[in-house]
Structures are given as structure tokens and as C-alpha cells.
Amino acid sequence: MENVWLRSAGFDVSWLIIPITAVLLLLPLDGAPQGVIAAVALGSLLLSGVHIGTNWTLLFRDGTFWRHDPMRYVHMGWLILIGSAVLSAWNLSLFMSVYVYWGLWHFARQHWGIAMLYKAKVGKGSKRDYQADKVLVHLLLFLPLLIQFARPGEFGFYTITLYRFHLPEEAAFLLTVLYGILLVFWLLFAGWRWLHGTLNLPAFWTMLSAVAAFGVIYFCTDSFLLMYALISIPHSLQYIGLALHYHDGKNKRIKRWAKGRQTRFFAKFWGFTMLYTVIAVVLVRFNEAHHSPLVYGLLGLTIFHFWVELFSWRPKHNPELRDSLGL
Image (cartoon, rainbow, N blue to C red; front, side):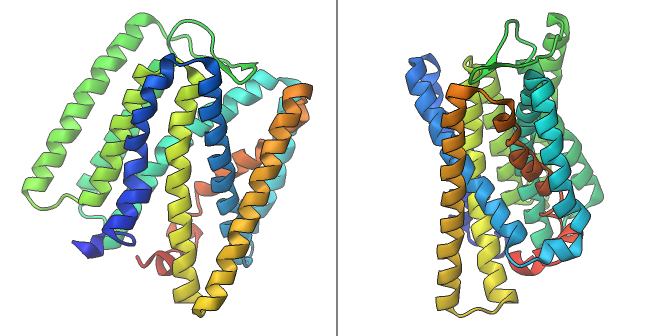
């Protein structure tokens, strides 16, 4: 069973699977004072800074991505930053809505991407199984998001009021019923594959933990800020673990670095990510007083990160992925 894990059972379960379910222990904070929720949100911001910093380290460490596809990995960055600054200056609520909605979907879909890495480790199996997982898991991750934002009343992200859907109550009820039917069908289909020995267990547990936890968080959390933090924290931990494994594999299998040089790389790696985090926190604190649309526009760096991750974990867009992860 050991060879189906990306690194090892202990590492993968600790970094990639447990966080999204362990964070459910913080659900009782939904009724806590606003200051407590704000502290949890600050913790999620610090972790988010580290996790986004790891993405820049991966992207710019030695020019591999620059050379492979400069339009996708370099020039789109400038376009997204400029577009973010312009949109935030023109309509801050609309810009923050784009950022938050895309972010929440990005958080959810990362679990699908990791499940696909597990399938790539041993081969994806039958096309039918792959297509069934793709359709059902995407629906099971998206429907709670759609239903949750159909709740009446406004919601805000820090001091910004965001746009929300105007989904009729009857439609929300029907979508909830559909969600339940699809969940039962997917679990039965997974059980059938398990009985026939074709179920990729690490991929299944990654998808199941995400489907279950996202559903619980969306349906049971009233505070939007806490909901966002509960999803952001495990997402960041998961990505940090994946990036550490990627860099470790690249340094050993591609760079063939000795232990000393690899240790120096990771020292610089963490220095870079902590510097990025400190700058992000300083800007957020500055903006609490000034509410500058341009500072919000710097979230375009995060949106660029969303964009990069659409491609950087796919072999055809990352020529070193298979060797780095040992796929």
C-alpha cells in the first residue's frame, strides 16, 4: 500500500487529509465573540501568507516556468495585477466578490487536484471511474457553496459588503435534495469500486474529507469570516505540505543536491515566505486605517496565485512535475 502515497502514509495523512477534518473542531466558535473570530481569521491570514509565498518560491526558483510558458506564468501576472488594481478602484465590492468566490472554489478544488496526483501515482484507472469522480465530486464541492450564499441577508469580508446570489428558496431546497442524492450515489459507487478492488483509497479519502468538511462548514457556519478562515487554514497547510514535498523531490531527483545545499535552499525558502507574510500583514494593518482600493488591488497577487495553480500541478504545464513528485 505504501507506493500509492505521494510521500508516505504519515506525511500525506498529516498534511493533505487530516487538516480539512481537524478544523471542524473549531466550529463551536461560530457563536464566540467577534474578537475571537477575528483572531482565528488572523491566524488563517498568516498561514495564507506562508502558503502563497511557497507558490512564488515554486514559480520563480530557477526559471523553469518562465522558460516553459512565459505568457501563462509571467505576463499573465502583470495583466492580473493591473486588472485587480483597476477593478478594485472602480468597484471594490465587485472586486472583493470575485476574489472571495474564486478563492473559495480554489480552496475546494485543490482537494480534487491532489486526488488526481494520487491517481497519477498508480495510473488513473478506467475512464468511467475518472469521469464519474470528476462530475460528482465537482458538484458535491460546488453545490454547498451555491446553496450557502442563497441565505437571506448581507454578508461581509472584513469591512467590505460583498455581492451574493439571489437564489429562490424553492431552488435552494431542490439543490439541497440534489446534493443529498448525488452524495449517496457517489458513496455507493465508491463502495462498489472498493468491493472490486479498483478504488484508489488515498484519492478517495482526500475527496471524501473535502466533500464532508466543506458541506459541514457551509451549512453549519453563520459567521462568514469564520467560515472563510475554517476553509483557508487547512487549504494553506495542505499546500505547504505539497510544496515542501515538491521541492524536496526536485532537489533530490532533478538537482541532485547534497543535504547541505538542500538545507540552505529550505532556509532561503522559509525566509522568503516569512518576508512575504510580514509584508502582507503590514499592508492589511495599514489598510484598516486607510481603506485604499489600491491596497486591496494587491490581492491581485493572490488571484495570480489562483491562476498559476490551475496549471502548475499538471504535467503538461509543468515539465518537472512527475520527476519531482515521483509519479
